[in-house]
Length: 114
Image 1 (cartoon, rainbow, N blue to C red):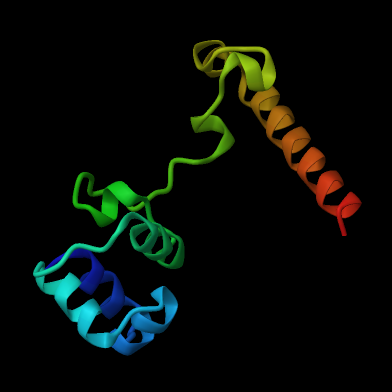
Image 2 (cartoon, rainbow, N blue to C red; image 1 turned 90 degrees about the vertical axis):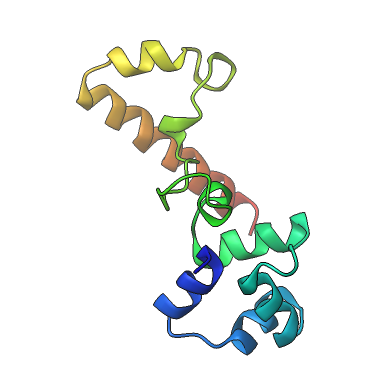
């Protein structure tokens, strides 16, 4: 069973439910599930977002459903002035401070753009 069907069944959804989310037909979803047809990139992204899993998981490249887009996973010098390796060396308390500050900045931005 492919990942799309597995995720759909885990959520107790019908092919028609998925079809509405990705703006395709029930038949197309069935073809995706049977491997008779491949979704385009935009559809893969919609499915990934809907099921809250990584594209790699959907494509069968990893068994981890986890989305790797947390700030801890995308650190770079341009973003916070240190490399991932430097960040990894920090004590847990300092990592939490960076995380909390990032959430604060995000919240400020969202409040200013309402």
